[in-house]
Length: 174
Image (spheres, rainbow, N blue to C red):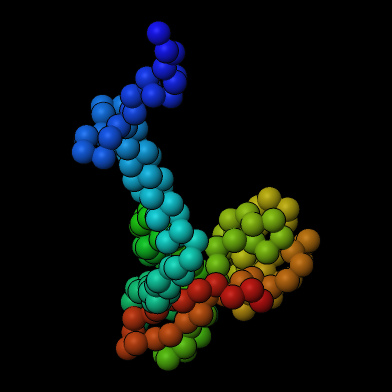
């Protein structure tokens, strides 16, 4: 008996006419799902990193109220609502400003925070001054430092008047 060549005894795994077997099909599906999952993760990340966000040109001006009833040179605390956008979160918050009517067509609005350490100050009508109770800073009606550790005058809102309505913009450091 003649020994056969071992290469001749082996059958090929797949001939050209045969369909892929179950193992090859499963591997193709697994690699395809992996590629699809990778693309689902990479595409949004690439878009976040490569495409600049749309800049929102929202107005920073907010209506604070009517100043026709205010007495000239007498500070009044006015409350208003401001919309704040923080990423996806949009909140409406209450804010205040100390408003001094200077004339029929003029007004000054001060930020309610002391320039020393950010404490809330108040108006003392008897002394005709703004007083910070925390560290003893004293400010005049025009916002200038009279006494205390405050390093600079009170910060002011940008102000514009439309009729008797007061509109407040961003706070500017003095």
